[in-house]
Image (cartoon, rainbow, N blue to C red):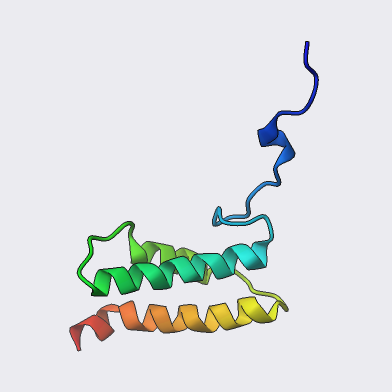
Length: 90
């Protein structure tokens, strides 16, 4: 019987957004994904996911002291403002 660990158990667990094990990097990648989705939707492509729901979920992330995550949070706030019902009505 083989008692070696499986490949899945040897891999690091992904953080809450499912992109990377490091939470700050994971958050930054989520913001990148959200920006790309908004660009696609503006180009007329069908939505891949509920952008507003994912933005709201990402807004709950606390960035801490990681400078990249702080910058990503600022970009996320801009995305939230751009996709708000008031911005879309204008």
